[in-house]
Length: 100
Image 1: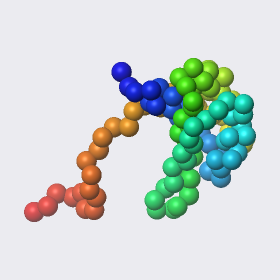
Image 2: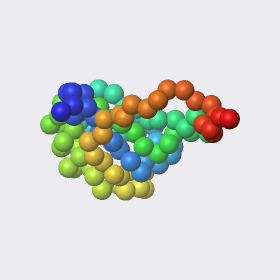
Image 3: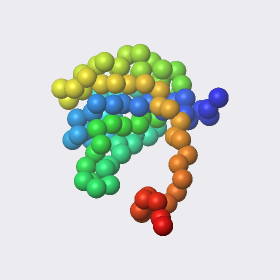
């Protein structure tokens, strides 16, 4: 079973690409959030169209999923669920082709 933060973190998918943290805070009011993360694409340096929202407790996170999955935000239908734990991936980068 995951830790408390994992159970309080939600995934908000299908966000408009120009969404801001401030707009999400306003949309989520009166629910109290601890942290909002809008991932940025490394190549385009633009938001990727989703966010992770950490709520103060598991009950608020579960209620947000129930109430907001399928809701409209910025003209788009949201996909909201409890975020899956981040999988560990090998560090590194660069050329992934087989070396000879």
